Length: 323
Image 1 (cartoon, rainbow, N blue to C red):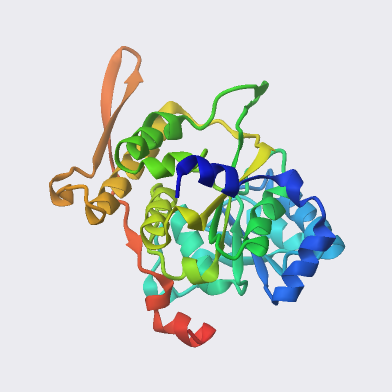
Image 2: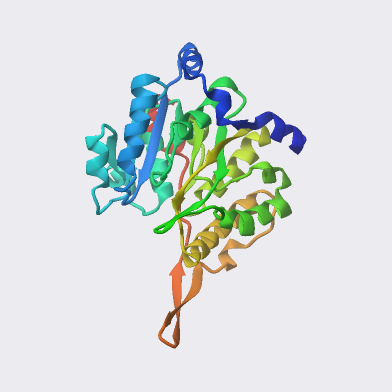
């Protein structure tokens, strides 16, 4: 498909889906169920507000969501207690499929959500959004309900950064612009149509999610995009403008480690898609510097980007969902 044609056809604005009664009627006509997953690690400042809003607007007032679940990586603050108090189903990631061990990373929570949650559609929303609104869920779910050819809907938005002194009106999406967009431009130009490929908010059909391997670290979103593109093509994607998302600022050093993990995941996938890369010869060590007085110290981080297998390959999953 022509890229401009795809952008015109598969790019939406959340305001197109303002009629939630109509959306729910179509959902019920198709017999679909929808799960909202909030992956967490120490999000006590924002998790309560997100659950209150989603439950009151998209469960009680307009029954779009059939379940709201928190999959927690082991928070040491009050995240799980607050989430449970406001009515979410709360799960500790380590307690789901414990026979497969526990790994640390957001991708681990997303993978285990495929097993734990019931919905035909799973919508993932990060738990650190300061300006949360129901559009963060219905804006992503609606294109899947209204268009059966779309399988994976990404969010995009303006990304002002929240600082202790207030909100800075520009910035955000830095790893996308300096790493992922150049890589896509070089090797997979079709994917440059995705405005924010690393956004943490997306909704996906179960029959797609359970066939995807899940890197447990930074590379999960990039890998998903490449895997969906390889298997179902550009037509399977949709994207929705959610206007604005206010979130925490991340330090440059943290973004460097994120970029390293994403690059490893990209190269691993690219090899299967015709880009010749010998992963065994690539280092898994990311080196950065920190300063103590007038001395500079090199710090090494090992970033391996382990992966979980497609959920459909697990006998426990096939038995639970009859697949």
